[in-house]
Length: 615
Image (cartoon, rainbow, N blue to C red):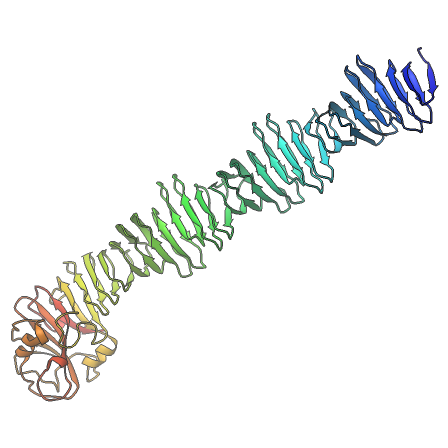
């Protein structure tokens, strides 16, 4: 039958020959040994015989393969066809639209424009030379040796894509793609869900922007558009680059930033590792608990509660908006941004505040840390040792055990809950309203106790320490036996009691800017001229009931001036009391309501004019 061409009517026949042209009314036939089959104007349903076939087809509506390996080549005019059980399909130069029958199929496809899967299981392999295919309803797609572009249709596709696929574009429906186990390197866009396989998967997102859920990928590279990526709940270890938004799932996610510097908004990530470049990471507003390894440069918290733990190799980070920050076992150097931060920190080596107001709480495990430019610092339950960085610091703090100043001028304001602390090289200390117990291990200090019965142990050295009083009520109440400061190691002739503000005006009654000092025995105090008196008569007690011991040593006043006040130094032979004394009623005697003890200077019995000054 070589070179035979037949025209057949629409009957159920078995056709044989080389080139067969079907009639116009449609045919349902089985073909054997035919090289070319041309359908007619009707609906043609063709079944290939068993044993395998190689056939050129044109104008066939339904083609069913046989039990062997069937290879079908579509004529160049294009075809729209339902195909079942064909192993190899070669499209022609025209537009080919192929529907896979309901029985499922395993087929190699080449030069076909549209492929629509049926209800069965379809495994489609793209042929060599690189293919461009629009498909939907296919269960498994395997790329060929060339560069392949597959576009899913608009009804949504759930599909496994194995290795050797280069470009995959999703449609307007919901596309769920799982990568095969051999590892894939794919450029894609428009997918809703992508799950990696057992191999190493490197995914690049196209430039139109993508919103996608991914899981089990090793590398994900965003495009020029805005990419929003959700990580699956199974957890993953992924390197990401050029993404704008990354949202973790319920599993354990380890995200490494790739490339040479990333800017990323994220939330719900468990571990984050920076890239080799300068990275800026912004935490979303739902709150994140995350471990941040080294190589991250800038970290910005969101409106939620963010809890960050640094990795073990040491970190140098600029951050703001974190609620809790815990350092690792390496050396961590943290700089706070300029908007102001309220944060709890632990295990950091260096913390530098920004231009805003920073409130720092130290963790409960104790810390040894260098701090600079922090406005408020609150110690934890354990032992905290803080060193102030250079540049001169002004800080409000409480709850520390040890504070070491810098080589510059440091000013410390103590909080009102009471503090027990050892200080080194602090230049100025202002006490709180509660009782502060302070030990100066070295350096010189200017101490203003405020209210509260403070206990101060000054350092023994040649430097001048100053005890500052700004008001008459900064000690015990009038006639009271408690409430005064206790100062050890006050050195006569070196250290000073300094009067400032309203207390200065109260004692410097003539406003000369210089104090009139006198040494007076009992009964010799002159209220008209004396401003500072060193009582030479020894008192029996400095803080007994109603301050009777020192009042007895004072005796009657040599001259009385109503409402005049003086600063009085009196000794009991062991310690010296610093008092403010007034003649409120001008009657020439000092009642218990006219004297109060400001401070007791322990183990001091000598004093001179150099021991007091105006400030």
